[in-house]
Length: 478
Image (tube, rainbow, N blue to C red; front, side):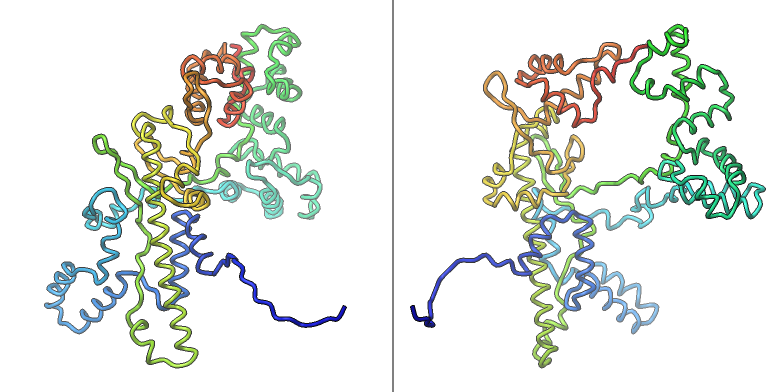
């Protein structure tokens, strides 16, 4: 068979992910803070792109420099009444709101009054800083102070010493006895029990300083912490030949101790959620407003846009590319906000009972329901609901919260899994601590209250998702 060359014409369809399309998809799944950071980064990299307001301010500064001091007050008053050049962005909020554009009264607030409370507070001291401050006030020698600093450098987030004392002594060039003595000093700093090597040692140090020298209490901490954790109270009381009432006193004394002395210092700062969407109730209707605070309003620099023809060669190609990139970014931002608004409106329509009565009336809903309602693909709905939060009359919830699976009811209808979780949490919060509800009993109560058919293992799964322990761990013996 002879080899030959032929030309063949073939028509195929292929999806090409252009950089612009990738950017638009990326913007959909960014949170508010990530979106603001992304826009700020683009403002730094693209000279054609600028934020609305900068150009007006620059012109105002130049005008003030050319005027006399007595005319500046009049110019400032005129500038305050001047309308922005870009009227489209001025009406941006009104376009993505269920009501007409509202007056921005916050523009007249004093900057200090507009600051959040957490922005005025000083930062929390760190564990190492707190301990170092105490060591500096002590009368330790330089050699002992060096050993103490090595010990502090090997503490974990909750204050336990994770390095052997032999290695610490070797690093410091000191004897093991000297390092042990310094460790004892560090362990009695505030908080008590810091730099302990085990939970037993941590609690025993606190008992020593507090004067709790009872032999039974000492034995409970030294040898029976695991039994206490598993609530084996009766065998322990029988072993030490004491009544349950007296054992309760020992248990209360141990519960006053802190097995994680450094946890309060190592705890993360609270994360404040800024909702992407606000839903307000006005009579029987619900108003949807997008939160666009701190999101820069973009525009194309007029100087670059008008003077492209004056440039030649690579400079012109560069400017044209940046102008196209700026236009695409502004278009992508518009599409993102438009999609977010449509999804939020659809959620309010589907979950109207939730907005009226709370989480117990949350209906089952999937991504396909919203996608069909707003005529978009499910993947788009999934991306736009990622890391987005909605402020509702019943608290702030992630948009993914409104999508939940369905559970069948006796009348043939369905209820959402989140509603069942809320009911489980309510039942457990109202139970008798000495006779906690089992998963089987909770399933029976759910059938009576909600009419939902649910298995015991499903109750256990929902309970674990709520970080609630089993009935045996919740039971109080005293």
